[in-house]
Amino acid sequence: MPRPIIATIFTDAIAHNIKRAHQASGAKVWATIKANAYGHGIEHIFKGLQGADGLAMLDFAEAQLVRDLGWDKPVLMLEGGFEVADYKLAERLNLTMVIHCIEQIEWLEQAALSQPLNVYLKVNSGMNRVGFAPDAYVSIYRRVRALACVGEITCMTHFANADLENGIVEPMRRFGTATAELMAENPNLPRSCSNSAATLAHPEAHFDWVRPGIMTYGGSPFGDKGAAECGLEAAMALDSEIIAVQHIQAGESVGYGSKFTAIEDMTIGVVACGYADGYPRHAATGTPVLVDGVRTRLVGRVSMDMLMVDLNPVPAAKVGSPVQLWGKDIAIDDVARASETIGYELMCALALRVPVRVV
Ligand SMILES: *Cc1c(COP(=O)(O)O)cnc(C)c1O
Image (cartoon, rainbow, N blue to C red; front, side, top):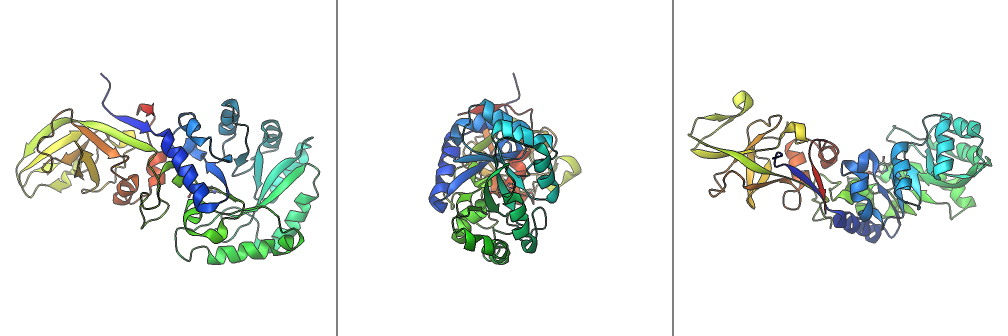
């Protein structure tokens, strides 16, 4: 019998969350599916993506995959090309390409395409990762606009702090500086700025297309506001079972490093899930876990293949009792917070050895 661990992917939750992005923004939605759909599996969630207006990613193999699966709506490559040949591929697969640096303009010129390619021209609005400086943007725009092989140009940026109340004030000012002259010439110039946090919290940045990632999967982009409060549904559950039970006395310790010591007599459950399954090793004692429908807590250090939980609140629990590590009842963001990380990282880290069931 295989280990009792399993991940469940809820395609209806993906569809719901995309609808939520439409409702919240009134804009067209690029469902962001980079990193194999934040660990959910592009093929697994493909049915749930049908309500999106486009799919955004950055790996060309993933672009090929969605075309092979029959996706005929727009595809956006968030990092653009990495060499000249990528622009030929983009032409063949009809991809929209981000342009964030001069080298990419040169590669596009060298590719000598016969079809016009739609592009997203990126402003560096203060994150200082990729994009053109606001004061260089108009001349860059004009250079790209003059290329016969370029179709529609959308002005874009990406926010470093959209999860904060005043986090996009300065970036929006810079984006406005970069695009003001162009907007005066063409008030219909398409724009795209919002990740999940801005889609949910900053209407002034919605414009024509939003690019929700984490919210598509039912994760919250905010540190202080849960996914349910944002109207989102979890698209991934990680479930397992109790595989052993220990009765210990006050003063006994649990697990590697003896990091947890019981202050009363306890029943400890051993769960078939460890860091080699993608559960965070740094999850602290107290991290929420659901056993037999009862919310309890992780105790001690997470091992490679097992972790231990407090069964005192669940006296009926036994070998074979169901355990939810995260999903509809245990928010992945709560597990992430107890591990000093974010839900994004846990989703992306789901291990290959965990079997996946799609519902
Ligand atoms: C990943 C990414 C997004 C989505 O971000 P979330 O915080 O997951 O919503 C949007 N735009 C760009 C450029 C990205 O790289």
